[in-house]
Picture 1 (cartoon, one colour):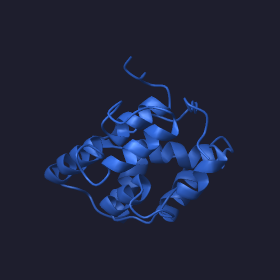
Picture 2 (cartoon, rainbow, N blue to C red; picture 1 turned 120 degrees about the vertical axis):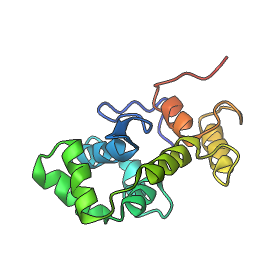
Picture 3 (cartoon, rainbow, N blue to C red; picture 1 turned 45 degrees about the horizontal axis):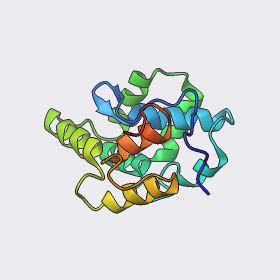
Length: 153
């Protein structure tokens, strides 16, 4: 069952915010920390990490060639900054080139716009009572759903 719209979760940053130039990574760290503190909605637990293939958490870990559970353990034990955790990910996985970063960021920012994710954006909009086309990407939907932007009138 969807959460009430908008779903305001203090301490959860927008998916487009970057850590050292990489979108989404910081949001994934926020979800790890919020879950550990008991501040992430219960319904989100099943979709965290690699539990759902092709989720944004799963895609981010695949992009960096890291194991989600290892990142989660490092995040919770270390007290490292987001930038230090990204460096940990690079050291334990893959350090992307500038071209790889550009492709990753563009893919993530545009996910749902005229691609196989479009239907997902439409179904999520329907869950909160809004018509298709209200927003075009999953990042825009997340920002709408979490109250960072408002639906056009």
